[in-house]
Every structure is written in C-alpha cells, then in structure tokens.
Figure 1 (tube, helix red, strand yellow):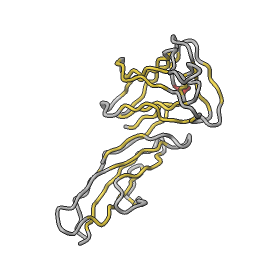
Figure 2 (spheres, one colour):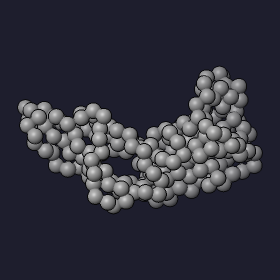
Figure 3 (cartoon, rainbow, N blue to C red):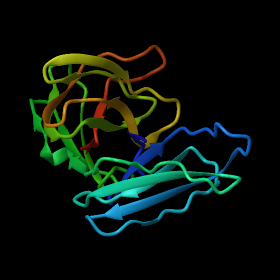
Figure 4 (cartoon, rainbow, N blue to C red):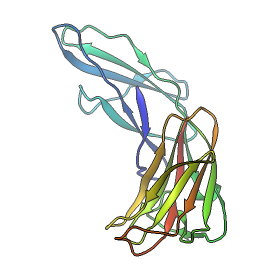
Length: 214
C-alpha cells in the first residue's frame, strides 16, 4: 500500500489517499478488495470502499491519533490473497504559528484558511521555517491572482520552486509535497522570491499550514 497527503478539507483532519495494485493470476478474475482500519492500536474494522474494485481511497485522519491498514484481494472464486499490512501512520498538522519567521510576515484571520488563520509575505527577504517529524511533508497555501513564487528547502537542500498564481482564489491548497523522507525530524523552509508569473498581479506568498505523515 502507498500513502499520499492530499489537499486538506478542514482544520480538524489530514486527508490521506491510500492506493494499491492487485491482479489475479487465475481464470476467475478479481471480485473485490477488503480494506480494514485500526485506530490507536484497537482491533481492525472494515473500511468501506465506494467501488469494490477501487484501487485507492481517501481517509480523513485525525492528528494525534495513529492508524494502520490491512488489505486483502478476493477473486470471483472466493480465493483470498495474502494480507497486506501497512506501517502505523501518525498524521500531524503544524499551523502557521508553529513556524519561525524572518521580518516581513503578517498574520491574518481568514475563515477559508486551514485553522482559520495564516501568515503572508511578499518581500524576497522573507522566509518561514518549520521543524516537523515524518516521512512525508506538505505545504498548504493559497493560490490566487495576486500570488507569487517561493522556493522550498528541506534540511537545507532546495527541493523546488512553487508558483502560487491561479486565476481563481483557491484556499487550503496543498502546493508542495516531499515524499520518501527518512523517518525523523526535518526542517522545511519556505523562501519568498519576491517575483511572480506573467499572469499574476503580486508577489504574495501564504503559509497556511504544514502537514506531516510518519
């Protein structure tokens, strides 16, 4: 099974997509998959799939709780595959207040933001740094017509440049994801570039939240 952080829907949960692949070597063909979930070490219970042959599903995980999944494939002749069991997952949300900021940032209350507030800056000298724990981290921001560009560094290494321009305003967007990090504590730094794409009218960069999954 594979796990990926997805764009957050609200301030209480971390949306995580679980995906898998399967096949049937025999003549019967696959009939369905069975997914089960365990929360905080409790017994596994069935976790319904919208389509019996779906190969992915999104679950809303609560920060501070732990989750584990197991999956079985069943063919038309009712033969069962071996059980696939995931590692224990622990999701976390680091709100903008958890970061360390250089000069130039402003905090704003915004109902559409993840948790109801965010920080923003436009100057090229502005940066925000978070210390997070997990094997996957993601930056949640706002995309809009007046948004600019920023670089993302993880553990001091440049991992990408993000352009936050969008013709329409989109809040709580997952704009950068880093997968396959070593399990432990990592530093994620967002550096405002003070530039924007041709279509944008401004350089503003929002830091809404950082998500992590370990």
